[in-house]
Image (cartoon, rainbow, N blue to C red; front, side, top):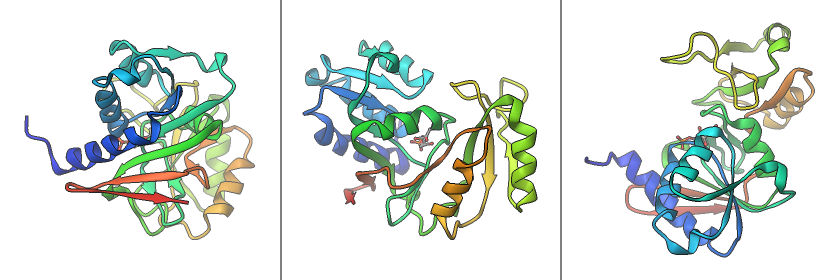
Length: 230
Ligand code: 5RP
């Protein structure tokens, strides 16, 4: 099968990330198609066989275990050496929107508690301002969905439950049992203020703004990679 230019760019970012994680023993792994390429690459490298992994989603647990990797429960660890994940948007300060795969809550926990945080993206993910292309996902307790939605709509935000394209009827549920709502903001002028607002709303388990949480972003192009660091 012929790879698209986006697939090649994602693979290039994933290949470059190998260098950044090979010296660590406990590796956190995010969710999504770019991370899937990273998993495929390390599955072919012997040095990654005896390391321990922590996954951000059920999907990633399955991908890792199906390839024979040892996956720890996050209940058994108190710190992660290095975390590798994708992102939906990255701004020039390396702030990000994540949660396109609805795994934002565990992704933020693993990111926060990792000593080193590496993100791998294709170049389409670079934006001037967060919110330009993607909504901000919210993981919301089921019993608070209507109240959170009204609260945000009253403040001028467009909020929509994320529907499954095919399969389950009704809104998408996260791995932690929340309902995924998408907050359509357009380009966000003050990300810190929105981060603060969303952190302060009871019922929101977590949201997809990742502010100041990336150490390194590896950007894949069809013919090269670019490494952005804080
Ligand atoms: C999942 C995520 C993903 O990392 C993000 O959606 C990027 O995915 P992809 O690598 O498939 O573009 O945040 O919750």
